Length: 305
Image (cartoon, rainbow, N blue to C red; front, side, top):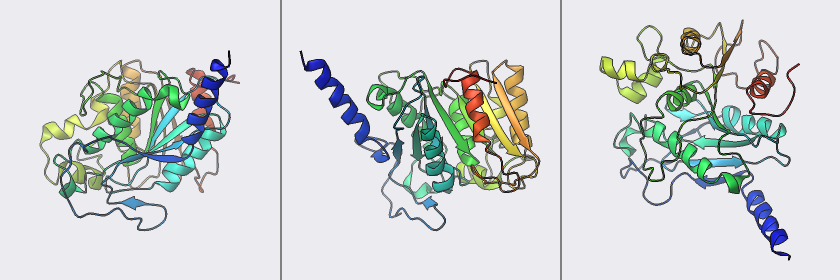
């Protein structure tokens, strides 16, 4: 008669052992990789580069929101490095405080082309693998497999919007046919378009090279890839962003509206680029607006006032 209690204790123990733990993204051979001499390094200010072993950092809250939602976070860095501290770990901690499980994705960057076979898809492979892994381990993590979103900043926003618009293109082995579509996406000052007039040059060149074909530019200009099946989206961007033109977010939002996809956008007057959760120019807690939006779309418990 003690078996149910024993099983419960084992489950609780397994969940707690994952808290703030790093696990490999893949088991077995790493797909789309080749031998190289690159070594992972942290150049400065909580950034990481030279990633050859992608992984997930797992942040599980002590007390969970009843919707058991989870978010996979993709830091930015121009597809060259990851601002993994202020666009990753700090964000995960903030979600945990609201009872939301968070997973920070340390993904491979196309810039490290000497380590990969096809740099065009390497980041998307890692994003899809993260969605697959988290969904398949939902019970272990204590989350709802139908409430798994993705959040990305800057180039991580491009990766997130790619995951949200290219989910029918499978870039990884997926014999179990696990759903690779995020249930919602949150985009912070995202790179969206690879068109000449709107692109962030570093992100496009690192992913597609200096002279990409027009069909590739269009394929990864995600404002052109939205359908009614695109996940609900929340977007925040500063109007004075000199690194990623705000038109990236505005065009994406307009396309979401045209396709009747639930969406919300917050345009800040100032703040520039890369402010993470703390915009010194406009010191508001914009993540609170994300939580309100999540409540509205039934990914969190609470009342919208």
